[in-house]
Length: 417
Image (tube, rainbow, N blue to C red; front, side, top):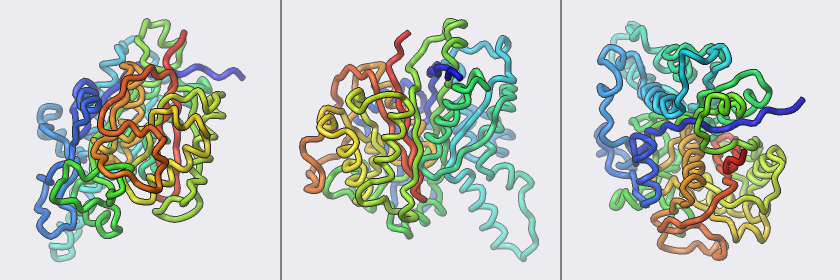
């Protein structure tokens, strides 16, 4: 069976550094930090008092008050980003076969704030279960793609992938394979997350995962820097329209890039810590290259998982050196989490978008906030530190890894007819 070619025909983003694709790209290439003191709740008693919140996002610009109350933030974000991607794709929704259009979405947690608020309200009561009737349908992680499909009448595959911080990349790979096999023409894919809430911040603080650089939030996310002390929690969504190439060609769609491969693996090592030698990361990048039928020396750029944690950054770079050998020194390696923070289940989507835009514009966004070299990191690696670099990118890789040892890797290629 000959596999179908899969291309990207639409993009949408709602991020801490930009509320649409244009704003997002402008901030990425200019090295803008999205980290700032938290405004959503009182952080006086929290170890970490900052995060990468959305800026100037007014929910009533997108939903009426009644509709908004039925949607957790993570579902609101999913609808906003997917609406932009669908519009960007130029799809005529009245002309396509909606039975062959699906939604495969990623979310690591889902409606955390809804769950938190409902349980807290119950705890303050007399034990009578007076829960909001929208509690469950707002909270469940699969509801975001459900809303996207209901909004547009898409009747193809519809589900959520949940693999912690690898969730959106997992969704992308599932979308790729669904189209490759010929069972769908179009998949709306991506991921969303909204965990900047007391439960999210408190939970990640309890496991010592977050940076506590409260005196300088804007520089707290510092992948590969010797003084990194944890990740910065972010929120938002990224959406991509994946489409079968002949279908896209027939309707004269613009094509951003071709999705040529995806790989999945497990560390099988620890609940939260990566394997120190990155064996699962080695496996996933090798699997992705095999799936794409490409050689390591063909890769020009890697958007790393690069969360700014002491163990994770070193393990990932060790794995890159193992897979790419001497060619690793010729690759532009970066971490856009230095600007966006870590969007958990949405990370794979916004970082895939960053890779595609880097390819389109010939610019690698920087890894910002780097001040002190880490003696455990090879100084000959080009980590695209602090300033964007111009480069003709023909092949770009995007890595995302999640608690539980989940690893996902996606490979994009500059479109060539």
